Amino acid sequence: MSTLTFRRMQESDLDAVLAVEFAAFSHPWTRGIFLDCIRSGHECWLAFSGQQQVGHGVLSAAAGESHLLNITIKPESQGNGYGLALLDHLMQQAKARDAEVTFLEVRESNQSAARLYERYGFNEIGRRKNYYPAVGGREDALVMACSLID
Image 1 (cartoon, rainbow, N blue to C red):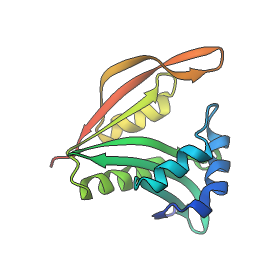
Image 2 (cartoon, helix red, strand yellow):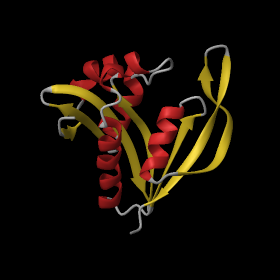
Image 3 (cartoon, helix red, strand yellow):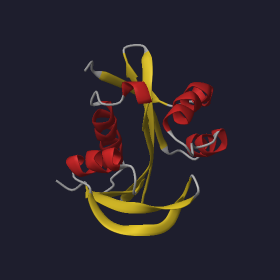
Image 4 (cartoon, rainbow, N blue to C red):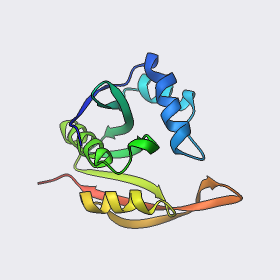
């Protein structure tokens, strides 16, 4: 694995971000959602392997807690440790914003992501019934949390 570098997402990056998002998910975020996140001051980051954009992530932080809203690695770049590196970068941003805990939701069917979060230190704390749109209906979300206090 090459070392990842990171930079803040800008509005001019959204075509490339959406290409990754649409390749990775059956129900991707829209341009409007990413624009709202950038404009509202969320932690919006791009991950690069060399010059190649391999992923992105969005985190909100306020009042001592943070929420991991989106973390995406290009399908052809998955399995190289990039997800863990991007997750760690986002958690460092949460700590820099004085968050003591990070929460997230993950599709119940997304076992590879759930394992990644568990490996990092997240624990399942609940479930949201029918939270996500899914092909042919709705899907539950696992709610996970990770303490950022050393």
